[in-house]
Length: 232
Image (tube, rainbow, N blue to C red):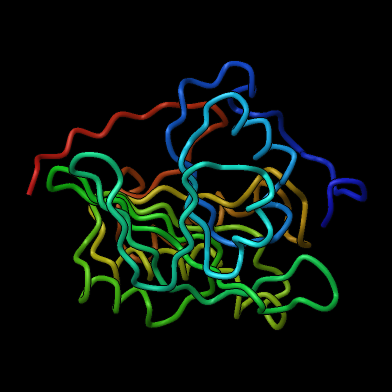
């Protein structure tokens, strides 16, 4: 997947670039083209001059864009941002590459964002593995987890790198998350399952597991949801 070759977006942006609020920090999970677009990053730097966190090995790719505060992270690396915000780069089961000859030359992962006794976890792209339990043991349970539920067929090919909805429900349980939000679906038609199949499969997986669909949700493009969670 590259900008000039497609595939095209199947849905519009939830918020147009020109309508974004002030952005102080960007988190990059890995360097695949659907997650790291250099032209978009350049526009965001010009508009907001945010800090930038990247996976180990990706500084050489984004460094020329001119971010004033760019930090390269390995798994489990912690970095403070401002007053009272801590971000940890988390392990994941995925891959990286921008072309034919740079596979696995940079890292990939997710992020745990901690502030004022609350935790938000972003899984990044990942297959299902024991790292979710490891995160819970090492860092603690997230109040909100954002977990991928799309781009999972065919399983013989995608299982190592992308969870299906049933596996995302298992990850939700492994993490002990209070709430989860399904992501990584509906924007690009990357794999054979129908573009709305992840939501239907998530509903079925939640029903089979006995987890309420209010506990693990999906959001529409641009939708805002407010969670009122007491500090630990």
